[in-house]
Length: 185
Image (cartoon, rainbow, N blue to C red; front, side):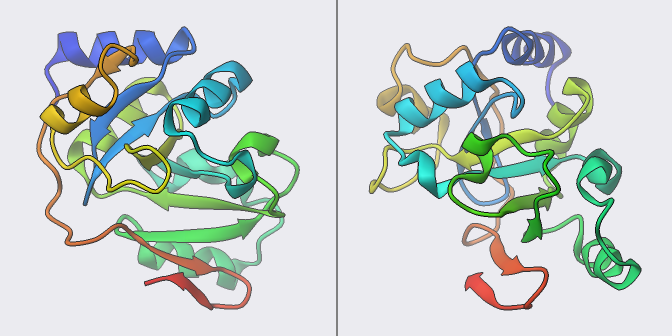
């Protein structure tokens, strides 16, 4: 569990358009408010990531992704419901809800309901999904500790949420909801 003072600081940073770092299931992540274009731009600049690639959104519950599901069939929703929470990221057709910097050059959005207690607590306190992308510069290995975060992003983040990684040996599997194809195992 995240200390309440630390949680409040992180949520306030997110609400002000800040970029934060936090542990996830497998690696440390960077996050921001997905509806704040300035925060998204800053996060992509910190990572030196090509905006065309897009980023993943993470949530505490499937209900937090309800705005993205209005065009999905019942069987498609059932696939998501049975795979979450867990290390499964799904590419879901965008219904016009997703900012271009989240989607990148794609017509789908990457969504995951985390089973990491700290990530879930953070999304619940924020009141919705967050951007979740590995904490690293493009082409570099992701941060695996708070010390790595402080070394890579010294003084550039608005909050760091301490905690342990979730123990997954690798980042989430990424699948396309419509085709079922695996893009990252």
